[in-house]
Length: 325
Length: 218
Image (cartoon, rainbow over all chains, first blue to last red; front, side, top):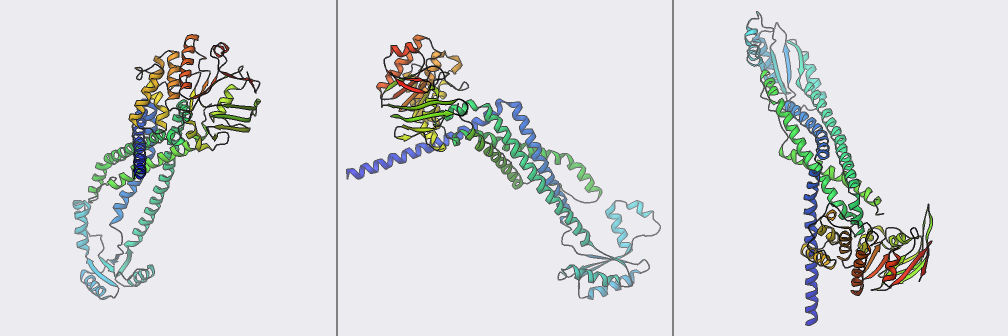
């Protein structure tokens, strides 16, 4: 009875000790987090320079990304359209055009067909282009009439499309055939190159963030080597010694990530009104996109993460070589 | 507590600094380590503090072989030691309290316990009430006492002092030595490296003398 009591008591005090150590550990971390922030403010010029360099590098990558995302948004609604435009010869009358359109509606490969007469085309162009009055001055209508054919979705392969295109091309009324998809495809290829470029630039600038932070931490470690020696002599582990430095690295990444976000937002804010004007000129309703919350989160996480990684690499190497004399 | 067996240490550029060192230091024993500059006193202390590794022999500290120890164990073994230096090795941008608390902070002691033990340590060296001061605001003797408070705060089994009175006048040296005697009575072992012969004579403790790397016990 008394023995089990003693064991129980021993277990309890052991648990209490673990709890106590854990609390001390947490307190240590909290202290490291804020004291390292305080140290950054103690050398304001150096810290500001480093953070600015990091922020510019991050903003370059992030800004490039958002630019591509904007263009992507612009071309986004063109996707999946494999509509064919059949431009009719000039001598084809409206009635003949309508007749051809009716024929094409019966075609097994066509999903929907729309006829646009010369006049309709002109009206539409006047309305949308903003050249309204200038166009009225023209004596003859230079626009051809068009039949828009939306092929069935079953026509997915390129060859099917090519075959259909050749078939339409041979119609005597048709001047030439244009597939919208061709340039959508080209656009998409350009976009995929741009996306890859964003990826590569991000990797390069991410490496820059890692190395710049690592080097900054190396210098800080050198500045405080006296403290490192003394801590080692009183029994501090490398893990304990590196903690405040890791937090410094974290803050560098975190603050410059946030600053980069501000820079990117500022840049897009500056080009927003000219872009809007341009969009109105083209009669569009293009909305400039900014980094979303999720993207902001990724930005902060990756910059903080890369900065911590850079610091960790340097600390791991340096602390083994910094030995008290 | 501490045992040297056939310990030799050689540096690549200066040759053999310590040759065949053998001695024992019992629990609660105090001994002086003397010898001229360059006789190997500092090297001997560095071997115990695991700042250097010996080339031959074994050093046992409280049952642990510290001459062959893996890098990651060193911090934990060092916590059994109290180190005192001639140049005090204090952190000048931290208060007296924080300096003394350092060994406890690194070993994860909780806040209340740290506060209690730092005060107890400062009380022992007569500096209670100066916790909030910075080292530069203190005299040399006071700074050394801060160093001593830091060395005893984690209740080490062995205190190593490298020329602890080297920068102090005779009165202050005496004071420090009386403090060391108190620790000895409390059961702590002490090894004090000094070239202050007068001090060694005044306090008649065991003397380990180094001469060109050889140990001669008086």
